Amino acid sequence: MNRRARLLGPLLVALAAAGCATTPSTPTGPIVIPDTTTKAPTQSAPATITIPAIHVDAPLVPLGLDKNGAVQVSDLNHVDQASWYCQDYKDDNGTPTCAGGGVIPGNVGPAATYGHIDGHKRDGVYRHIMELNVGDPINIRRADGSTLTFKVYKVRQIPKADFVDPAKRTAAAAQVYGDVNRPEIRLITCTGTFVGGQIGYQDQGVVFAALA
Image (cartoon, rainbow, N blue to C red; front, side, top):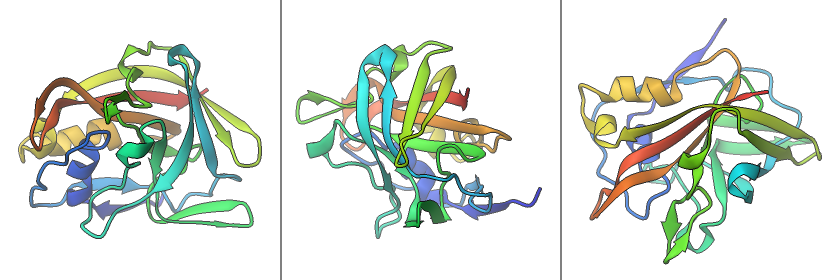
């Protein structure tokens, strides 16, 4: 199977900070993250995400990288909105693409979604994702009215330091963004102890789910 990989060192740590009000400094050196954008696209772009077990029903918007190479996440005035990583998003006649990188939910690969844990003294859309259990459904409603249902199979809390430490970050990247041979999604936010400063919360919360 022919696959490309992009060197996304700055993106990796930026993604590790997604869902927080602050962003840690970016280390040097690339991380190889699989890119599955060459696969046949889904027929419609994702529009909303619903997670019945934690009462989430929110818009899901495509966001890529900013001019500094950091992942874009919903601003803190929209903590009730989730995003999915899609660089250079386009939608021609109902066929979405992420020309610069990213996996469209429903395509083979790990589609990465992000949500704040909190902001402006309000709970964020992904505040309670660490309470999800294996088997809980996550529904992605698409622009054409169809729905994709993913089932949770793993929930992990990963120290942010693992994404920064040169000796650990490749393994951390593979754990979260490693290539898979089926459609999957990741729900990603900050979690753990709040320490403030550039770190914010000490850990990254990640929910792994596969298309049912």
